[in-house]
Length: 263
Image: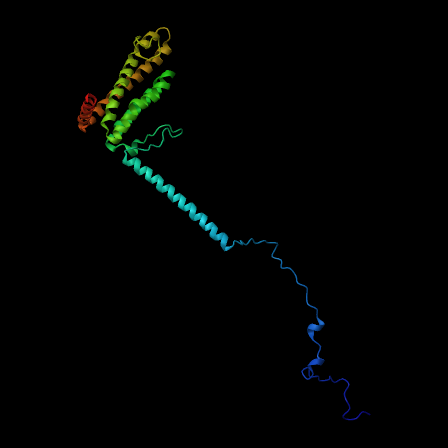
C-alpha cells in the first residue's frame, strides 16, 4: 500500500521556463524560415519615369528656347504688318470663290454699309458678263480682264476712297458698257457671223432655226439686262464720286501731273 506522500504519477511536473534560460529550446531553432515569395499583382506592369534632374532641366531649356523663337516670329510678323499698314499696303487674303479662292472679296466687312447695295449690283453686273457670254475666248480673256480692269479698281476705290482708282474704274467700265450694248445689238461690223447673241442674229436665225433663234433672243435679253445694270452702276458711282468731292481731287491730281510733266 502506497504511502500518504508518495508521488502521483498522473500529476504534471511544474517547470519554470525562466529559471534556466539555457534549458528552454528556441522556437526559431526548431522552425526554418519560409522562402521568399514574389508578390503577384495580376501581372500588372507599372512604368515609372526615371528622368533625372538633368534631363528635366534640358527639356525645360528646350521649351523655353522654342517659346522664345515663337515670340520672336510673332514680333517680326507684327512689325511687318505695322510697316505695311503705315505704308498704305493692304495685305489681301484670297477668299473667293470659297471652293477655290482666287481673289480677295469681302464686301460685308470692308465696304461701308451705305455702299453695299451699289457694290453688290456691280458684282452682279460682273458675274452677268461671266455667265451669259457664250464665247470661250471671252471667258478666258473677259473674266480676268473685267476683274483687273474695272471691278477691282471699283472695289479698292470704295474701300479707300482713292480718286485715282475711281478714275480707272470710270475709264474701263465705260468700255465695258460700250461692249455689252454692242453685243446686245450684235451688228456684223467687228464680230462677223453669229458669235454674239444679239437682236440682229436672233432675227436672222428665227426663220431657219427657230429654237436657236429663241436661245439668241434669251442672250439678247441678258445683254439688255446687263446693259441696264451697268448704266445704273456707273450713274450711282458717278453721283457718289461727285458728292464726296473726289472729282475735284482727281482734277487737282491731274493738274499736278501735267505740271510735273511740263517741268
